[in-house]
Image (tube, rainbow, N blue to C red; front, side, top):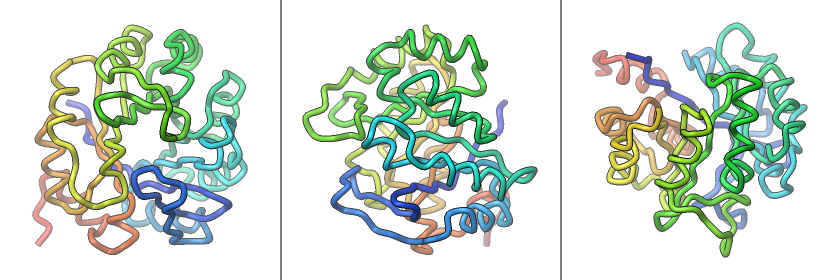
Length: 249
């Protein structure tokens, strides 16, 4: 059985570490001004993966923060693997993201529009280096930075098409729960796990160790945690021990 992946999140905007509420760029909370130092702290705490999102890139439709991503990779080299997403809508953009030294590139918008985009990337880099971001609102997977009015794809159709294109890892965010610390959408996660189309990594609403254990019990292969760490609701060491089945008292 594959190891359950615990991925602390570093969302980048204008060089800072921030979190958004429900994907709304007008509802931003800034936490740190030194993202590489945050990454080092996560790695020193035992994180083996770090999830980096270029929010500026997601809005612009092309990477904006790759230099900062490369600094995060360098800061954690040999300790934690880094995955990078946000604005990766061309083969050149994906090559740039992986060129930072990142272990995985996270694609979304263009893959939803054209699964052949994902197929070409998997053929070039391998299944273990390309991850699909499946950001869900009202049963539909959305791209384009989650902006209101963005046309979506039924989430089960999106996963079926991308699985057929060779994608094996899907990071599923319940948009309306993201950044609110209200708990994960377990019904959605169980439904997508039951498709048997690949590994599901959960994101959105995680606020406690109990939430992480519930996601694990739902059959997910990993979890992305952001605001709960920054606001001190959970300790990363305790999370790591919990997913390993160890006592955290």
